[in-house]
Length: 190
Image (cartoon, rainbow, N blue to C red):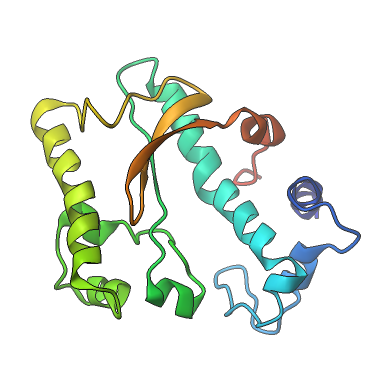
């Protein structure tokens, strides 16, 4: 129950509202702790987008920043965000979900997952994201630096981040507020 109260408190910061959308999401018929149901068609209007932002912050963004902060004490760190939303990402509602970056990183359009990801996209879309992602990964493996001209090192909560999308670019992001909201909350521990 305490964990639910922490979620509710944090979620109210992300989407201030008289309604508790986490509770509404959890109340969906097929919800379990191990699976997430298809988002109901009206859920986006009722707060689904903020919930997705919340879940992304909780499961990926905030932990990645914590790891980058810890690692930069011992060596160089580079951060990126994968934001390419393909037609299949739109149709399924998954957008640019976890692991959607893998076809670009490993430069393979032939895996079933890659075929799913790029279904309905022009060939150039797959080719471009593969070029944008695979080349720096290989360069990093060989030389220890992904792309010195376009992908600066992570320096802290206000830092340059490589954004992989239809037009890949580097953007200076301020993640201070996000990390201040999360502080030292831990939901994985008993």
